[in-house]
Image (cartoon, rainbow, N blue to C red):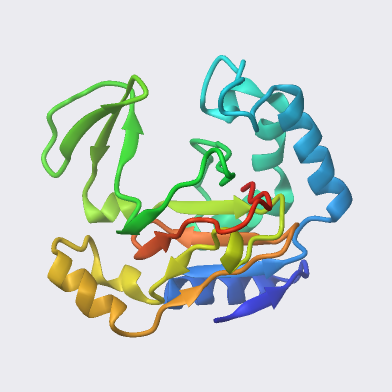
Length: 224
């Protein structure tokens, strides 16, 4: 697994792009200071965005609910890296918090991030598997759309194997949309690795990368 240290050089950004294209993900240690991560937590706490049973935000997309989050995702430090990977026309579309606790522990089997949220259902060639989740329309778009998406996971806590670090199959994003369990089993019979990230680290992960989210086996927080 390739982990890089943060610098502002163009060579660094090129390296991140190359790693993501090759492996389907990249981890940058110490992307944010502990002090700034604590500020993020304070802002999220103020809107109860870290408490699933007490959320008072008006929109589950925190880009629309919390001005601080909107400023964060548009920050030059973050958006410049994303644009280096996806191109200058890139822009953020969604922000949310996930956590695993003793009261809210869960496991996700091997999968890809295939669904996108849409405003309206318009029957369009290549868009399939329409669903409604939390009152929001979702669909699976063509592979070409998913290849232009990137998740940026900002780690608010240390995330190790015992508290739910995700497991990935490197380079599996190059297989496109994986259709069958047989194909998944063939891929995961090869290399798989846990992506452990310390507080303040950032993980960039492509939508088509095959990954699994195990249960947490501890009461340590794992807010992302």
